[in-house]
Image (tube, rainbow, N blue to C red; front, side):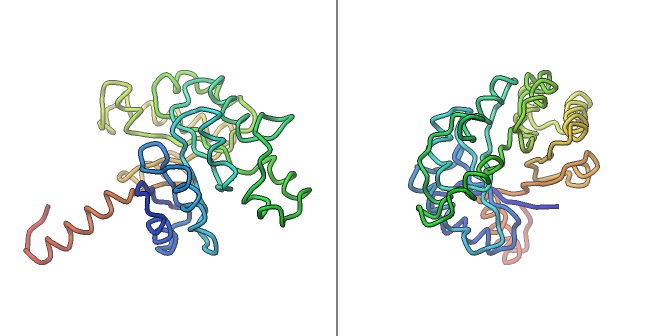
Length: 240
């Protein structure tokens, strides 16, 4: 199963380090992170020459936000807070050239700045980048059948914390109602034949049993905090 980590710091060395650490993908966070457009490009360039795939999460389900980064050639665009089929259609359209979508023709890294083969690039662009829709609100769960019917969705990625919060039960992963929403969503996504992912820092075996096919398991701030606390604990003989 592909395993990834989330990068929020602006310094692209963090993404480079994440790739070198052995993760299968790095999720560069333009929603909650510190990225401007130039930083986004540098982060995406930082994985070149590694075996790590680059995911970029845009701040919103918005054509302009997707346009700001898609020409820097991420392997996947992660679109947060997709609530319904109309949102999903807008997300897919922004990632595809006409006639399938409305992506602007500003060729850049994906075409090796013009040095690549255009016909090959154009054909690949029909499926590249992967469009990852985040399912992170109970309204989206209610609309999931319609969302899954939208052509061009590459993957659904569940956001457990936001989804639980939208139900008024933030962080209550094992609450029966919350767990049922996770279970139902996973079952429907797998039945639709669409890739299923999750961002979680716990319950890995539970999510595997739900059929998850890729996981993001830690972000940079949490990893740094955990590393510092672990080392302090070893030196001081205490646990945090």
